[in-house]
Image (spheres, each protein chain N blue to C red):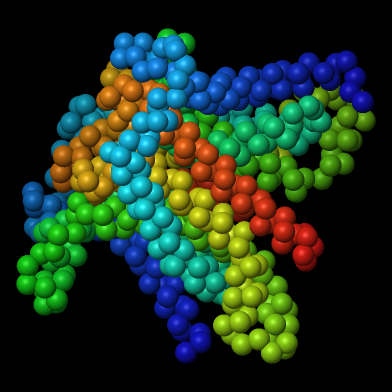
Length: 286
Length: 256
């Protein structure tokens, strides 16, 4: 029970916190939902009447192609991150505890340093007369510089480079929790390495896989500066479309609709993540 | 074989992660103008950077913005964490969920929603809009840092303070705040770094009147390679790195 004189502080804190979140998180998001079903208006950004034109425009072949291509690049990024990150997290969880702390720290360092600057650094390496081409040419792998920059590959390399830690960290945490007895049990029951991997390790690390996919796939669609710096005009992301619609074309309903698609994707992935966690929880305790 | 293979693999990935950073820093000391070939050691790009008044102004703007965003988000974040930790109230799970969603949702979604809000209420885009936006995306990080500290905290201390007649406010000030100070410092440093490094949200909510560093860098690197950017980027990386190490050091030390 709180006495009367304890209440003002609690009330003040709750009003401040709720006020901030309602005004700067909930209200703006509802605004975006509202904007997506209104009509485009170049001077006031949005106006009545309500309609679903923006969503219809998403299925316009021109934009659909950009969307699908962007989704493809984000999916490739996620796949490459998973392929690099899964064995990485596994190996990391096998290192001695003391060293793990340092290695995890070294992994999050890049996350806390400027992603734009790091993307630009990749440009130094991938440029026509950049480091990678000079190295390849002096090794005699190729006679003339390869076109690495302004390709789809460059965008995917950039995205993987920026987002890899987001894949590794949740995977590392599931591998770290993985009980070795389960692997031994599987072995004792006659399962080979491959069978153990498919029937024990993969299902047990599924929540980590889904969390990693969520943390990589969504930002991968939104990081508009990566294609701007590495990709050229043919390799846009959903993020570029949203940015252009809001800042240049002033077509808010369309930009809002595109961002709602992103949010829905996030909700879907979160749902899958929770579901996989709950199912595992039911099977072998919390 | 079973031991060195995973280790070699780990080492290889770390090398790939750090190569671009090293390349950038090394090239920032490059005398050559073209930016690709090595022309000898030089500080000329750092000199050029500090002689560029627009750049220096953007630097100060960024530092001031990061300073204030970190401070405000630490204050609100700490109160949020305390409220979540101490009080039962209606909608607690929703509050928690909202913070989680802010942290998980793509930055661009937050960015456009804030832009829509600011334009709707007629707020001029500039320092204030940047501050509000930066505080919002830093908030969950502060809350998590402080919550982690509070969760390992002996509950008998606030109980004792209350039994001795302290009000909630007095108890918070004299018992809880001293305990969470390391987390506050760490959260502040994280907020500072996040604000200083942000590109996506700032692109949307900044106006022409208030130029900040990441956006200046963005407009420079879009057109091509600029040797000054190597120097500027190196400074920014080193600065963020020091901040991060400081915050981790504080957190690790306070656990002992």
